[in-house]
Image 1: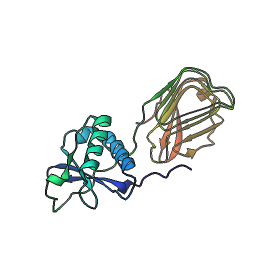
Image 2: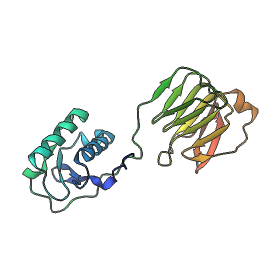
Image 3: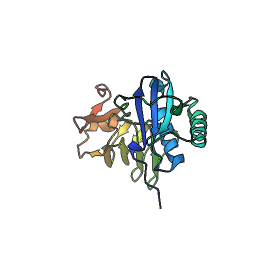
Image 4: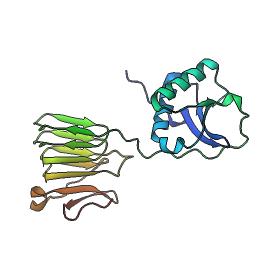
Length: 217
């Protein structure tokens, strides 16, 4: 049985006078909340690297073993150091939490082959396909999709919380199409079936452009 994901409040980043304080809710599995903290650090690394990082529990200080485990895991995965908050006086006022990133981007996936009927290609981030997607095939990507070839199967890009993605293809006549969960029955004219096209969301509706028009970023 798959484990449920940890809620966002299990790891909270807050600004303090000395830098950034990472609060861990120890009511959850401790190793899992450290891994969640690592994910958040990676997603905000550019900002966090300019600040001193401190760590403590939401309901009190961490013990030495907990501090050592957290510091080692974070150092190994992010190359960043965190200090125990236990050596500091708790701040009387804490600023608003750091905004979460819209989407944690996974590395792009490159595939160099054709997709036949019944084959499915999935990835968490952007996908670049050098080949054709035949009828009966399916592409599902968490990010944008670029196909240097023909698309005749299903193609799905983005997620409900990650809408700033696009699809680009050399020849485009898919059986089914969606971006961030939004689908369309829009008729593709013959121009789109013979030339490069870009597909993206505009006002929560799918818009398809021939290559010379291009998408709006």
